[in-house]
Image (cartoon, rainbow, N blue to C red):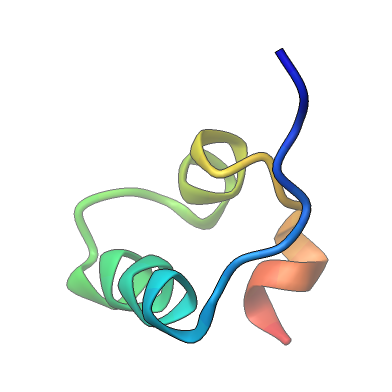
Length: 42
């Protein structure tokens, strides 16, 4: 299974909203979407 390295605007917004909802930590959200925490918080 290949990793998806690019997300469209809708996917990015959903990831940020997931983080802002506070249900998961930064690390959990980053791992779920196969991105680094640094990328997530930029």
